[in-house]
Amino acid sequence: MISSFLVILLVSFSESSSSRVLELGDRFLDVRSEGMWFVKFYAPYCGYCKKLEPVWNLVAQSLYNTNIRVGKVDCTRFKSVCHAFEIQGYPTVIFIRGHHEYIFNGERTKEELVHFAMRMSGPPVQQVTRSESFEILKANNPVFFVYVGKQQGILWEYYYMASEANQQFAYFYATNSEIGGKHFIIDSSPVVLVYKENTHYIFPFSDAYDDVEPTALNNSMHTWIVQEKFLTFPKITRENLHQLRQTRKYLVIVVVEENKLNELETHEQEFRDMVEQLVRTKRSKYHDQFQFGWTGMPDLAHTIAMQHLPTPHLIVLNSTTNHHHMPDDDPLQMTPEALEIFLDTISNQTANIYGGDHFSVRVYRAFFEIRRLIRDMWRGNPILCFILFIVPFGFFMIILYSIFCADIMDAEENDDDHEKKE
Ligand SMILES: *[C@@H]1O[C@H](CO)[C@@H](O)[C@H](O)[C@H]1NC(C)=O
Ligand SMILES: *[C@@H]1O[C@H](CO)[C@@H](O)[C@H](O)[C@H]1NC(C)=O
Ligand SMILES: *[C@@H]1O[C@H](CO)[C@@H](O)[C@H](O)[C@H]1NC(C)=O
Image (tube, rainbow, N blue to C red):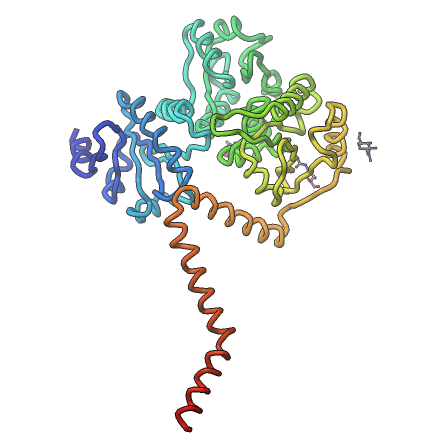
């Protein structure tokens, strides 16, 4: 009670009465560990922050009747707060519960943000006690993990630990073998499985968990969850790219360009569908080595390739070495067979290799990124960008001019001197 009163005193509410978003300032640091917070750290000039603004208001609206408080921190005004949370880029969205902080890595839509906050506000493993609940879960959630059976022993322990470590990224449930048996094909229990897009896959060591060495079981569980938490053909964004790379697989990325309404041109759509069709029909061939996906932001692929790619395009990232591969042919001309051959050459390591993590490549990539950031800033706030970059550049040019054209001025001065002497 006292703490919520404090919050009202310490935190000034947003100017517009229609917004449910709390504007947080320096004093937020005193109350951050009290209760649950969902906070956006932003800078007024950043383009992506502006895009998030209306979405964030909707998020606050949706979470208004929960015990999660939704706030925002302007990092240009409250640097100390953003420093305390080690904010690296804008916008950053963090869920804060007690002394734990969880960074949101998903796509910044209202649904994803609200789902994330709701998930983080509950326990890492949620108990399913009614059979009908799974129907609702399946309808609302394309991927989730389930533990079926008695909640004891090392399989349960490791499942629980893995759920704590991955609560940010996935849903974890537990149920008894009676309810589990109605929804999933299982031979024995306990068993761990992942439900994915209308089907399910059993954790390979579920059956033999008694025979597997505990550390090995734990490691396999973690690796399996990291790899299985993605859809078969997810949308790739800057936010989830890092997570996708943790799969340690080759990332096969279809690069297309979405317009403002998230639509694609027909030939891009067709290319994307062709690749998706391949991965869906040949899942078992590619699953161990490849993770497929697509991105509607060519920028992301440009960062990887460090060059401008026409769309649609295909780029394959080696997630351990950061090297990448691209087909030699125009991707639009590729047939499914040509695509398969291309993936085979990657798999047998005969494909051309580009990029990587070499120092010179990293420097080049950094320049490429800075250019991108400036462009993003320009879109967000051209005037500020003008003052920050163009004006100094103008001064710089004047200085250059005065250095290189100095002899002309000197000459004139000398002439003046002559005149005076005469
Ligand atoms: C299980 O594996 C995870 C990730 O590899 C690790 O963080 C955790 O400490 C391990 N736990 C045990 C009990 O070995
Ligand atoms: C990436 O490249 C390394 C070195 O060439 C190779 O050993 C590894 O299998 C490749 N694939 C993935 C998915 O990391
Ligand atoms: C690698 O795969 C390609 C495509 O299937 C094939 O043509 C090539 O002979 C293979 N190379 C090796 C060394 O296996």
